[in-house]
Amino acid sequence: GAVVSQHPSRVICKSGTSVKIECRSLDFQATTMFWYRQFPKQSLMLMATSNEGSKATYEQGVEKDKFLINHASLTLSTLTVTSAHPEDSSFYICSARDGPASYEQYFGPGTRLTVT
Amino acid sequence: GEDVEQSLFLSVREGDSSVINCTYTDSSSTYLYWYKQEPGAGLQLLTYIFSNMDMKQDQRLTVLLNKKDKHLSLRIADTQTGDSAIYFCAESRYQGGKLIFGQGTELSVKP
Image (cartoon, rainbow over all chains, first blue to last red; front, side, top):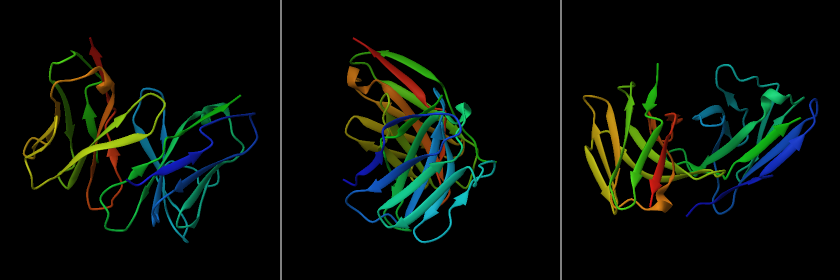
């Protein structure tokens, strides 16, 4: 089956620094990737949708200047949390779709971000 | 707006059947999904159903959809301790569209 990886799996950073999370589709080309945020014991909240080669579409309430998304290739999307603060600590999960008509999203294992 | 609701906890004994329920508000929902999340991991698609179906069975999993009541359920037969996880239902309006998730139901299977 389709595999999506994320790197790093865990990261701890100091308040005010930036951190980049990578999402890769390993065995398929992902025309669309999604970034979600999950708080403990809560659901996944969609942050943004990124299509290869174009700007990401952010959900209402998500600051695009704080959460920079780049989808430069068909197998890689990155999420950069800029000037991180403790309230940005969360579990970030990406997913990828292998075609515009595909109904299935393949999820990465997630990245646990802790901002101290 | 779009909203998906699930009960938060379910506890069953090993070997029993588990039934996890979900309700949604969007009558335009076309695709309905069940995902499983194990601790510290991403989501694994278990099964899905299209809105023009009312039942789908896949080995130990049975999905029932009552479109009139906007109610979706997942039945796991012969529940095992390895089934302990959080189960999310999700819906999307169109093929390839964004997913709206419920809060997740934590299933605890006791030996």
